[in-house]
Image (cartoon, rainbow, N blue to C red; front, side):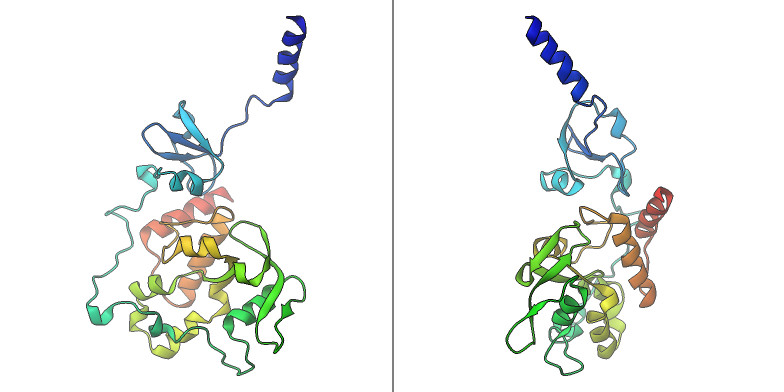
Length: 241
């Protein structure tokens, strides 16, 4: 019995007793974050929970945010109802990536070439990036295969359309869709997961406040509205700095 007692004592010393999970999924299905812009005011009260390493994982498991952090009818960005003629279509922002300078490298590959931290490998005609080194701002992961990289619109095209871009000229919408300020290289899977959501509906696993700041910056540049729930999220981020 003595060796076992000694082992348990050593284990208690080695293992931290104050380590807290980043996310607690409570028994009533609410995801409570320890830190970050979605920090839950009830985190410390939750005693019986399932632990998760990220808010994304908790939400994917069927959890939801506390009511105080959910966009609701009192402060959700208003999206006007649109007629069929006003419905979003990708073609309103041009037909895919532009090649404005006619050098055979469209916007996607110019961004990949520009953002690679090493000289990228191009295909035989020099028009497409094939391999490189991209650090995803969504996760901090290093990506090397261009096929696994998406060029994400920080402010999604449909989000912009629903919040005022439908009133822009076609030239302005094409500029918006190809503006490097609104483009980042990220994991394809996370870009697809994000879809057309704004920061009050979706945040990346890491660098959340930087992402919110970038989103708001683009809105200011293009005179798109910053709704009250997004303002509240930005204020929570500012309070953390």
